[in-house]
Length: 84
Ligand SMILES: [Zn+2]
Image (cartoon, rainbow, N blue to C red; front, side):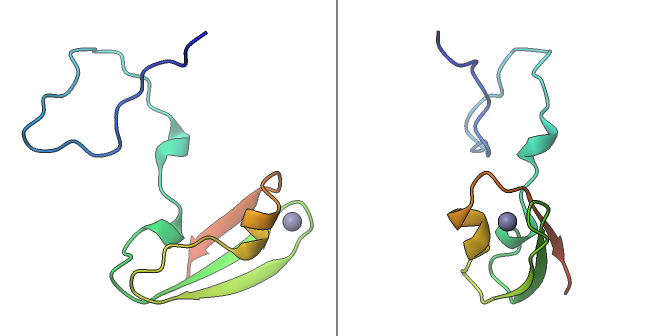
């Protein structure tokens, strides 16, 4: 069984969008706060819903890495929110 075809994240200006009208939109497509504005300094808070750990990430330009806890515990649901 093959996975359903999904649109790539960003279309280049030369390419045509698919002619499919009913492309399903997944709310999970929205990037996490640490993945946006990667060309500037960002302060992102994170909280793990599984073990209630919290942290604050100070992300320098070019850094789009997730919280270590999130990477070490993929099954944990971590909430991120932009502070500044
Ligand atoms: Zn956790």
